[in-house]
Length: 215
Image (cartoon, rainbow, N blue to C red):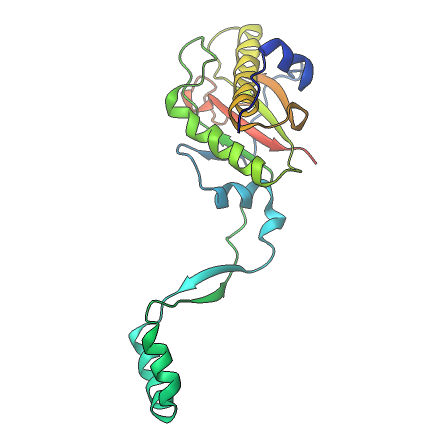
């Protein structure tokens, strides 16, 4: 399936763009689940769409030696059934298992994408993160996300605000161009250095991209 490629100017016009909040000063980000490696779809879904895990999930259970021993007397009483079971040794059963433990921050997830200095080009090492978000949005067509760019405290307020927004736009462009996500399902915002994750605002760990669910 081919997708049309959109220019940055088109994205700026099509994506609802939220202003950076510099006037309020710095505020520590609270309860955001940050990943250093690309999470699974199940992990993303449990954070961004926690209500989807409200029912029991299904897991594959392989018969073990103990269950086979328990079934032996019954097999002696019902040889026909035992023969049928023997004919299909690879058959597995589905059993209910509890849903994953809920995460502290529902609806918000962050990725450490290592952009080069003064660059808004998504590095090869960061594409897996964005790919996973795109896969989730493809599977959940009603899901809308706000993409937030964050920097550390190096550089001026205006510089970091502009850089963080350009990086958020780059991520949105990738989702539109490569994953076919409609621009009206995305919003971008540059947070600059206003919401550090650590006590040290210059810490490189504060450089990240976050995705927040929009209801």
